[in-house]
Each structure stands twice: as structure tokens, then as C-alpha cells.
Length: 349
Image 1: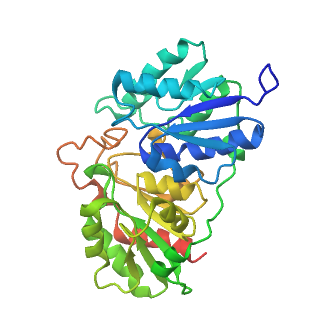
Image 2: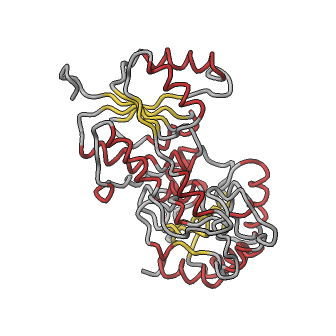
């Protein structure tokens, strides 16, 4: 409660990317559980609104950074819109140029504005080629939680609740079906080549899963190019379905929340599934969980890593955008059988 006896109202800023936005959910859950009177309003991109649909006590505001809220004038317009909410403090989980401009605007009204410490020095030491300081850094989830502590709302993430499974709509059930097979989600894409398992090897995984006739393999991706590639992966496999382009984002989350396991790269789908407590098997190429982007509350053994003895520069960067010469095949050091064994271990429990 603030000094006037009203619920404290916090603005939480995280505009992109999808995985980073999804990683805010356990932290918001923890805040709401410990401080049920607090009001949270998240400023993010409109397409990410469904991520927060289960969080009672959370409102969402869209930032149209490509049109209405573009540039200094657009951000001033956004600030004027935000000012009407009379926020007690701002929790900036993004700390980029846009949010730094908003910080200056909020300073005009002396609204407390705390920003995430991204730990850039530690990440540089972890990813540099020479004298690499190879060791685990603070998780992004904890970095988010640290900022809430700065505005007076410390939380213990070990106590954070998970999201509940969604009820599946008739639209989703009409596509996926209602047989008794277990559902295996596969999200084979990532933003950068160095984080993607070779599609030839992924096809072997899908073929093996498909041929057991025990599972329904549901492929996730976005955009016309990815959808076409997923169609080719599903071709000839009667138990494999391409979900890309068939569902809204809200419906995709319904489906993800009902999976038996998700196989993903170091990418957004891993975090979406983890928020529901779905077992997530992640494949890591030139990135590494030590950078702090492991899915929430997943066993370390579910992260299958490329061979650092053969490729000692791993992690080459935090986001996977640096692919040194000779590192094009790092993911091939994760054998297909190792992935299948891990999936079977989870599915056969």
C-alpha cells in the first residue's frame, strides 16, 4: 500500500523479445502471490498480450514502437498516456534506448524508475574468446526479481507458482484430435543459425517419434518460410502435425499448456512451455545456460549441450548471433539418440 492507503501500482516494462517477455511471468506470479494488493501493469507489444492472460492483477498496455510510439515524439505520446495511470514506480526489465527515454520523461514527475542490471561485464567475460571466465551467471529471472526488490517488493522465486493448463477450444481440438496419444511439442527454430539443430537431424528425431505410434508430434514455428519447412518435416508422418499458421497465439498457448513435453532450441517456446510446468528439453549450440536464459524451474539434465571440448569458445555470445568460423556444426555434437533417450525418459515416467 502507498502512503494514501491505495494499492501500489507498478508499471513493468518489457517490450521484446518473446522469450524475454515470457520470462517475466514467474516473477510477476511471485510478486502477486506475496503482495496480493499490488497492481501491476505491463508495457509490452500487443502480440504478447496472451502471455499474461492468466495473471489476475496484471493489466497490459501495448507499445506501438513502429508507428504511434516511434521516436522521441512517439515516446512522449506514450509517456503522456502512461502518466494518466499515476504509477507509484516503474520497473524497467528491458533497459534499452526506448525505456531510457521514458525514464527521463518519468523523472519530470519524480516517479521512481528502477532498471535491470543486465550483468554485461559478466556476460562479456563468459563469451569472450580469450581468458573466458566460464561459470554460471545470475539467471534472468533473478535479475528481474532484483528490480522488484529495489522498489520494495522482494520475492523468493522458489515459491513462484506456475500457470495452469488452459481448456482447449473446439478449434484446437478439431485440428489436433482427441486420441489418447501423448503430445510432443517440437519448436525447431531459433533467431540465429548457431542456435538451431540441423533440420536433417531433427527430421530423424521426428521420424523416430512418429514411428512409435505412441505420440502426436506437434510442430511450432512462425512465418511463411518456417511453415513451409515444417510442412516438409511433417510430410509422410501420420502422427505429425504442423501448427504454424493454423492457430492464433492464444490458441498456441492453449496447446503448449497441454503438452506432455516440449523439445525446443534456446528460444521463446522453451520459456512459454516452462511457465506452465511442462517438461522442456532444450538443445544448446553456440549459447549456454550459464548466460542465465535457462527455462524456469527445469532440471539441468534437460538442457542438452554441444561439446565444449571440441568447441571451447562456447558460449560465443549471449544471444547466439556470433558464429565463429568452424563452429557451423556445433549442434551435430548432440546425437539424435541422446535427444530421443531424454524425451523417452520424460514421456515414459
